[in-house]
Length: 216
Ligand SMILES: [Mg+2]
Ligand SMILES: [Zn+2]
Image 1 (spheres, rainbow, N blue to C red):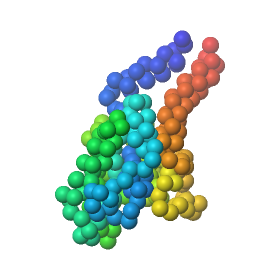
Image 2 (cartoon, rainbow, N blue to C red):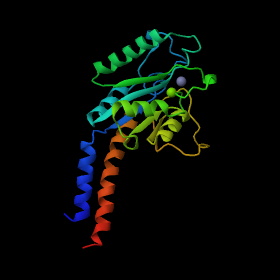
Image 3 (cartoon, rainbow, N blue to C red):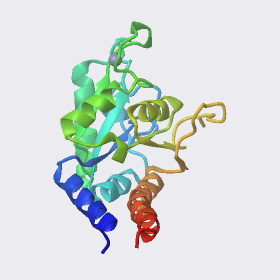
Image 4 (cartoon, protein in one colour):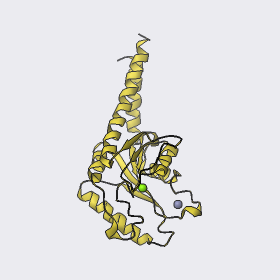
C-alpha cells in the first residue's frame, strides 16, 4: 500500500471514529404518507407502499433516518400540536411494526406568511437535526416529493432525491439545480442512496490510486 492510499485509509478510519454518521432526511406528506391535503386526524394517516421496506433498507446500511415536515395546518387551526404528536406516534408505531426505525421527527408548525426560519425550503430543521443526531450533512440525503424539499436539502449541503409519489408531479425543469436523482418510490430512492453512498467511497480510492501511481 503506498503512502497516499494509506493516508486515505487512515482518514476514512478517523472519519468513522469521529462519531459523525450519515442520515437520510425524509419529507412526510407525499413521501412517507399519502398526501391527503392536511392530515387532520390520526385515522387519516396512510403510509405509502414500500415505505417501511425503504426505511429498513436505510437502517440496515447504517443511515439514521429523520422526518422533516412542514405542518402549517397547526397555524391554520386545522389540528393541534397534540393531534400532530398522535399522528406521528401512529406513523412511528406502524413503521416499527415493520422493523423500520425513524429516529426523530422535526416539524414546522408555522403559516407560510409568518416568515419563520424553519419552514422548507429553508434548511434550518435539517441543520438542527444534523447537529442533534451527530451526522455529516455532506454524507447525508434529503428525500421529498416537492421542489422545496430538494431546495432545503441542497441548502443544507445534502444530496437530494425527488420521489414521484406526491399528489402532483413537481415540474423541476425550471429549477436552478435539479435533484441528484428522481425515484418512483421511497424504496427505489433508498436503493439509489445505498448505491450512491458506496460509489462515492469507491470513487475516492480509485482517483487516489491513479494519482499516487505517478509518484512510484
Ligand atoms: Mg411532501
Ligand atoms: Zn416554521
